[in-house]
Image (cartoon, rainbow, N blue to C red; front, top):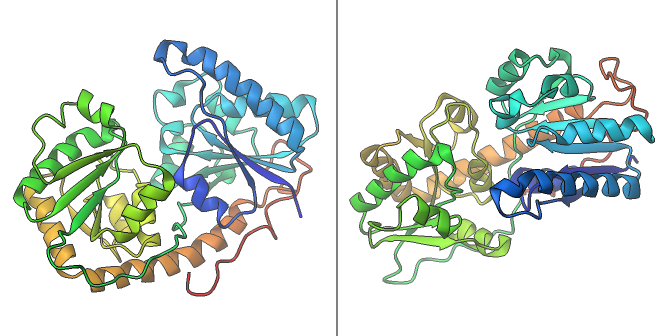
Length: 351
């Protein structure tokens, strides 16, 4: 069995965690030690050094790496050139093939010298190829459904208010939709809204000043606390203004068998149309979709569970194809490490 590691220059990433439930790699988070934006270049140097130390210590056959930042594959290709050779799989989040990260010097050149380039949906495959990545290197590997410990769903106690969980990082693609969420909350005063993410970011955007009484900003949550909220939510709402964004929260909701409402984009409809309800990023549209989801919770939970099982099976099959890099004639690095075949973890029946 090949030795595999996954490196991410961040403190947590749901996609990597969910993949690790199916693929047998050692996951290494290497967040920046610098909190101030102007110190980030020094943080990148520290992260590069940490990456080198991890690889030298692990002696892997396969290295999976998350991009962006776009310089991480540079570090690993340079290291591979002077040490033992390992297969390199670059897991490209959407921003890796979009400006500004796509403009990083040598970004496409480095991707073309890795052994596999993963993108998260078919829309991003086209973006990657337009960025100059060789089509034979690119594979689509969507987020797998999260595998969560699900609680029993007892009948709600009298007087218990339903709540909608809105996972959020307050990034640029969420700013306008979160404003629509606040408007939807005003239209649904009988429902609580719990918006995750760092409160200081919400405050900086002015979202907390005029928030309705039924909106709670949870601030940063531990994984355990977030998953507790997720698995007991009456509905999960995921919002974005980016047309090709796949939203990790959607797969988290499937893993929790939660009623799911999403922003109405073509990508999200193609990926989650069998389970989710959709609304434009406007208060009335989101409120209407949430009313329907809350009124049909058993049916919506069943739809999420059914789609999770189908996506889980499809993901395992695609992961086998995507992670086969050793001996692949398209692998320009000539890696001698084994692919991920035989290292996928099959989910227990019914999960």
